Image 1: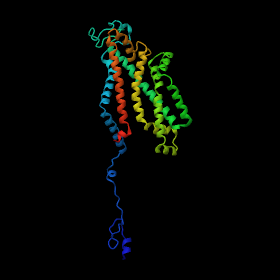
Image 2: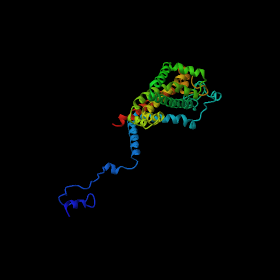
Image 3: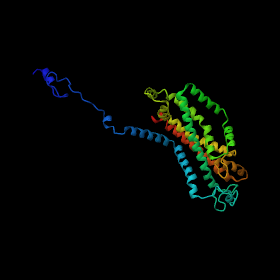
Image 4: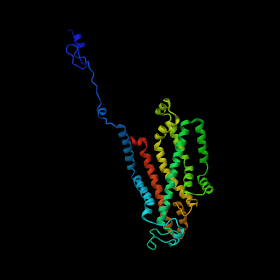
Length: 334
């Protein structure tokens, strides 16, 4: 048998060939990278878990944000769980009048923070008013964020005349003084908790609309968006599945800051006498009622609620700062 025939008769690829053709590699060895060979199932889930861990790590680096988050949790427990432990009357004015008016802290051994000029327990009033302030702040921020995100994403994605028209509407509303608009709406319609939520949200969605519109103008030119368009994806699918999820950092940060802003707006309305009507209350209304009392030396009617408003607003601002850093892509890749 010749050497050529010996080569052709080799039964299997990769079998060593003797003779003059020995230096020739007949078979090909497949080299599998160690990373690929050892890659476990659910790698995508592990990657997502890694991102979450990175966000948590960056957030925890902000010590003030961690303290602020713990404080907000304590305030929520104070407002909703506290009344279940510390029972007071906050809805019946006739029963409140049986208590001493403007009683100092510890008066009669029953009122740790004293009583108001109408006889309500100040500590219980802080819990009762906090429920309203936090509810209005959180829900109005949620409504404003949802409306602003959808509005801005639609304007930025479709562009052209629709974008110009929608943004001019935003500019017109922004040109109206916010406090004047709020007072007008609350005066026309009877003040209530649902009304305050929608009124505050109605003047707060403008900022996220402009922010998300700017994000959308950038994201709509990305390769993955163009690929979805080329495959026939509709505008609604692109906005809901690709534009908004990739702007989640901006959305979350705005929502956090908006909670603090909504609490301040409600406090301003309550201070001007346009808050929750009695017997209900909120922190702003308590502050307004306590200003006159503070002039008479009854400090316990103004300082506790004033300090609480400041601390809650500052806490949400610290949380927003930390979330902004944690959700920033460049920070995640440090």
